[in-house]
Image 1 (cartoon, helix red, strand yellow):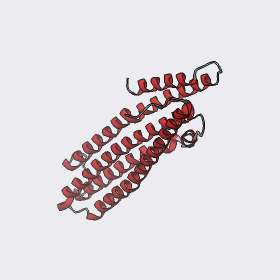
Image 2 (cartoon, rainbow, N blue to C red):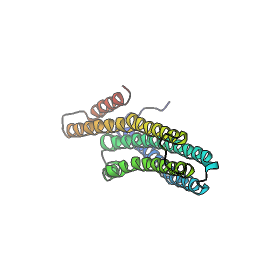
Image 3 (cartoon, one colour):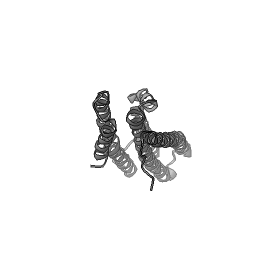
Image 4 (cartoon, rainbow, N blue to C red):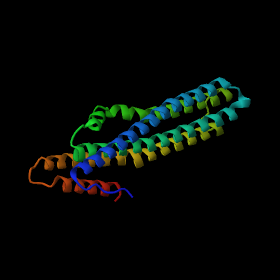
Length: 225
């Protein structure tokens, strides 16, 4: 068990050590996300391109549609993993911000980094996964149209394609609602708490240590109700 710090200097050293660990965790999760998106997008692009070069002849249409459906499944799995590590990254960032603001009272590095990240960039990432799914669907419809000498929305392969695409979209939307929406709510709540308690910390007649512990307790309660 880690021994709790006793005096001010020990508390500061303890907070600084935790801040370093939080920064290392932030860098680690960020690196994982970059590699996941870089290699994941490359692999998916390669698979979709390979599916397109297999050909559009009728004998292999079933095999090609099967490969496209597997590609859709891979896209959804990649999105799930992306959201998982993105949540871990935000947790590390918020903890770092807390330590910077209320324990170290200096070096607001995480606040500056998160402040310069445009929300539109984050939103664009969600659309990119949707574009990959749409591209797989369009490729599949092209295969069935050529194989059947025309587009037939009631054909077996097209029905399988539309059902697979719909399930993939539902899976991504459900993931977004259960992760990103909840995370944004928590981030807004924590940011509001930061703002209120920063104003309180400016007062000369308050116990800053007790105030930061109270804030930490409220954050913990919000994260684990």
